[in-house]
Amino acid sequence: MSPCNDTIIIETRDLSREIARDGTIFKTVDSVSYRFNKGLIHNIVGPSGAGKSSFLRLLNRLDEATGGEALFYDRLLQSYDPTELRKKISMLFQTPYLFPGTVRDNLNYCCAGNQKLDAENLLDRVGLKPEFVNKDADALSVGEKQRVAVARSLVQEPEVLLLDEPTSALDPTSSRRIEELILSLAQGLCLTVIIVTHNPEQALRLGGRALLLVEGKLIESGSANEILTSPSTEAGRKYINRELA
Ligand SMILES: Nc1ncnc2c1ncn2[C@@H]1O[C@H](COP(=O)(O)OP(=O)(O)OP(=O)(O)O)[C@@H](O)[C@H]1O
Ligand SMILES: [Mg+2]
Image 1 (cartoon, rainbow, N blue to C red):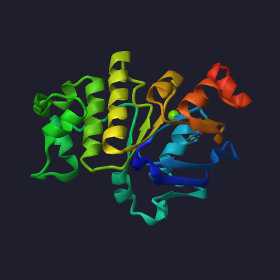
Image 2: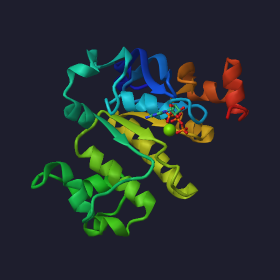
Image 3: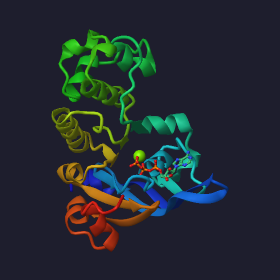
Image 4: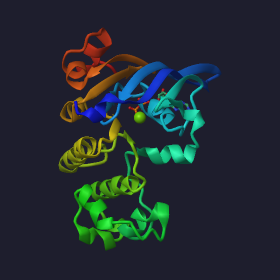
C-alpha cells in the first residue's frame, strides 16, 4: 500500500435502505458497515438482486439511507451539499451517457468557457488520442464513450469513482482497457474506486478489496483474492461456485 491508502475516505455504519414492496417493508441494503481506504479499488460482488447498485447509490446520495450513516472524510454525507458531494464522489453507469455534441463539448459540460480545460491531456489520461476531441460523441463506440464519460468526470477532480458494472456493455478487449484505466487511476491519481461487478474474474484482475453482498447484507469482506478464491462463509463458497442465483 502506498501512503495515500492510509486514509479512510468513506465509512458506512449500519447503513440501510428500506423500501415498501407489496405492502411489506423490504431492506435493499441491510446494516452494512465498512471502511473504504483512499486510493484502493473495492469490488462489490454478489448475486443479482443482492443490493449492490442500491448500496452504491447511497454513497453519493442518489438515494437516501433510511438507517445508519455514511461518512466522507469523517463528516456525515448529509452535511455536504449533494451537488458538491457528487463532484467528489462521482458515479458512472453501465451504459455511458454522453450529451449531443463533440467530445470537447462533453468535457466542457461542467464549466462551459473554462479556458483552462486541457481536453487533450484528459483524453490522454483515459487512453484516447488528442484527435478525439473534435469527434461527434454519437460516432464513438461504447468503449470510447465510456472513456469519455470517465474523462468528463475527471474534470471535476473527483476523489471517489463509483462504477456500476461499467464494462458489462463492452466487448472483452474494451473491458480490459477500462480495467487498465481503472487500475491506472487508482495508482496514479490515488482515486478511490468502488466498482460493482458481476464478474469475479474481473474483480480478481482489478485486485484490491472485495465486499460480498447477499440479500442486502455484507457477508464477507477482505482482499479480492481471498474473497474470490477462498471465501470463509458458506454463502461465499456458493457465490464463487455460481450456486447463488
Ligand atoms: N426502486 C425500487 N423499487 C422496488 N424494488 C427495488 C428498487 N430498487 C431496488 N429494488 C429491489 O432491491 C433489491 C436490490 O436491488 P439492486 O438493484 O440493488 O441489486 P443488484 O445487486 O444491483 O442486482 P443486479 O446485479 O441485478 O444489478 C432487488 O430485489 C430489487 O428488486
Ligand atoms: Mg445492479
